[in-house]
Amino acid sequence: MIDTLKKIVVVTGHYGSGKTNFTAALAMRLAEAGKKVTVVDFDLVNPYFRTADFADAFAQKGITLCAPEFANTNVDIPSIRFDLGGLAAQDGMLLIDVGGDDDGAVALGRYAHILNGYAETGELDMLAVLSFRRYLTRTAEEAMHYLQGIERASRMKLTGLVNNTNLGPETTTQMIEESMPQALKLSELCDLPLLCTTAPDHLSKPDTGTCPLMQIPVLVQLPWVQV
Amino acid sequence: MEKVLMKGNEALAEAAIRAGCKCFFGYPITPQTELSEYLSKQMPKRGGVFLQAESEVAAINMVLGAAATGTRVMTSSSSPGVSLKSEGISYIAGSDVPAVIINVQRGGPGLGGIQPSQADYWQATKGLGHGDFHLIVLAPSSVQEVVDLVSRAFDLGDQYRVPVMLLSDGLLGQMMEPVSFPEITAKEVDKSDWAANGTKMARKHHIVNSLYIEANDLEDIVKERYARYAVIEAEESDAEAYQTEDADIVVVAYGATSRVVKSAVNKARAEGIKVGMLRPITLWPFPKKQLCAACENAKAVLTVEMSMGQMVDDVKLALECKKPVSFFGRTGGVIPTPAEVYAEIVKLNGGAK
Image 1 (cartoon, chains in turn yellow, cyan):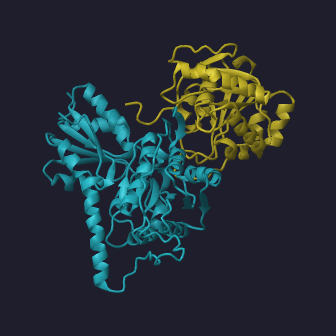
Image 2: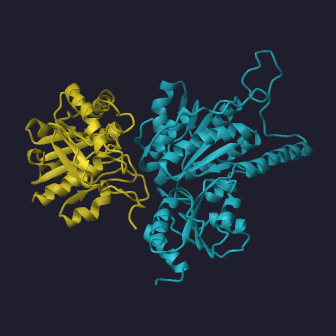
Image 3: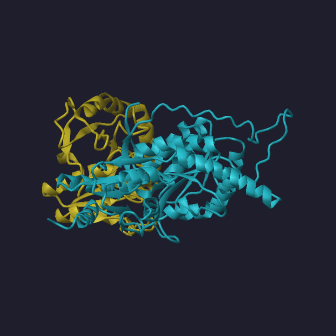
């Protein structure tokens, strides 16, 4: 999937589907492949547990991070000072992590007129990250409802799906395999390609059939995990 | 039910609906907002009422009104919002009606900040409003326990006719964890002798009130309430003891902080240090018996909180100063790390070997 991604990748989905982990892992992999990568923490909803948490890890890999100016501070002021249009125009890849489901996607709508231009010229992917172990997106039908909400709020069109089914630290290989029928059904219902299924890289490889498998590290951790 | 991944605030809201909560009145504030957001979407679909009031003061008085009818009712806020609700909570206690109040704590005092905190321990257990009264205060430490304690909060409130607070914090509210919703059967409590839910012209009307004209009458009613509190203290205190049987050092922590402490205890245990943890699940009534039992053979007790040290007072009172009690905490929205707590344990154990 990494080789076929467009220059601009917008990552959306229900909060808790694992967007941030996916975006961070994808950014690092692209950087390791020698690409110039900029990541935008475009979460104007969640106060903490966000892409900006990876600032140090990104810096080590030469990834540029743009985040709302008060991200991870003690105030709830969802203001952004970076110029998304300018970032879209620059060289290299741009990953935009849109937090907070359809409510979060409203802010993206502010830039739809710019980003849709790139979509028309085939320079933009808009992915929906899904977990069928996330409450209220347990089935293809429920998930479709969410995706439609995100498209409405952002005034943009999705171009592909990422099956990121997980149950946090309790994710199993079997759980991922069991999610495949729903993922394929959603792909059919929405007429969107299922680009890949992810699995934590410490698990044994799940059988994802014809769908490409992307093994990724679990980067998002709760504060008590490391001593 | 199969486990799903949920955010603490969301799981709390879903658990409340499943526990039979029919009314929610609130006013938004970070970091509890997902809770009211979830209820705003779900309550109308599931036969309940969600109402965003014009202020916290209005919301808590709506809670009092709904509670007076015997309906299961809840409100939620975060630290500064709970302060605003304190007057109404006193009225609810003085009216002997059940209600569930959620505090997803953030940094204080004043506007403080939106990062997690436990600096409202004193407020919740000792000073939430004027007058002689207590709330039952429950402190979950995982998203699953948030779910389990919400239904217990409603049951306890109905059983004793007292307001019950669930003391969460920003960390528990914002984090995602696997959770399942057990089949719950709400305890059926007969409210027919007090609920102001319509006489149908068939009985004398009920009065829900906290004003008493005669001082002696007020004293009697307060004493009757304190007799109920004594039963609650005897019956309902709860705590989790973790590896305390042979512990030389007992760490006392509640809520999200106990997760940090558990990591530190596990690391210290792996290195042969005899350390355990006592985690209060009820903050009022404070689990004095459980704490004393856990500390029986301990040489040192350490309390860890996301505050400048508040529960540590109750730990000292419960132990009647028979054991040395020290404190470690971070405040202002800073979360203590397992490494910091581990270092404190090593210090109490006589330093690095």
